[in-house]
Length: 251
Image 1 (cartoon, one colour):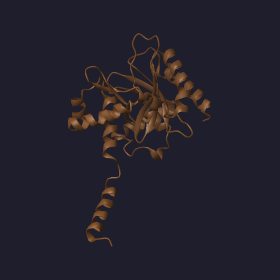
Image 2 (image 1 turned 120 degrees about the horizontal axis):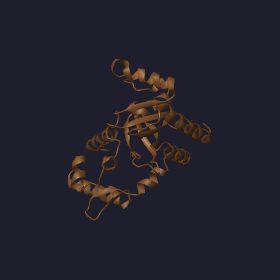
Image 3 (image 1 turned 90 degrees about the horizontal axis):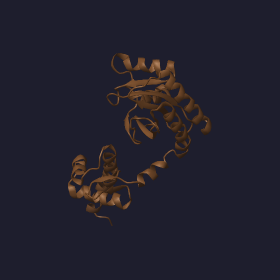
Image 4 (image 1 turned 30 degrees about the vertical axis):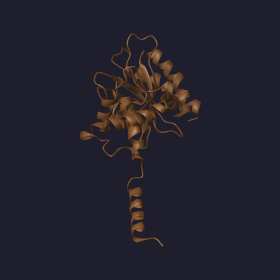
């Protein structure tokens, strides 16, 4: 027969499982990768531990596991950075979309002389999936894959909203005094969205929606400091790329 203590232990175990269904270790490991992705330079173990809010020994054990899977690497000074294995994993995300988008992004980036990228919607955020810098530009803006910010902010965020049904938009999309709604209305009328200083100070962006069947809402965008080209001219080039990608994917 089962004793009262055993029944109590089973109840406690079931409650714990219900309350904490996720793996804390896995969550910490993923968070470590996110911190390293956001860092501009490799981090020391102490710096990473501080950002994670963990003891150094705990952070070290996480890194050893990530190293074993080649997701992070350490340089000669012991500083930690993301490993090349992550690129292989990232290439498998929406592989067909990336494969069709890359040549179009490359052509547009070189023609416009601007960094061109593909952004997708991910649970209320905009995530850069693929980015191409122009080949012969004197100076260009880096847009790293994996970069994310709230949807609706910046040109690609607005363009992504235009590719989504309004009933799925965030509840605060109207912003202050309905200004954001007015911007979205203008973007819909123009067929493209623009932004200046919204995500990163000093940078401009133009973006067009990329509605696709079987994929999250997406957008094509450029980011740059200044240009002699008009917003409409840039948007027209991005729209041509969007049409080609959609046709290739049968959307």
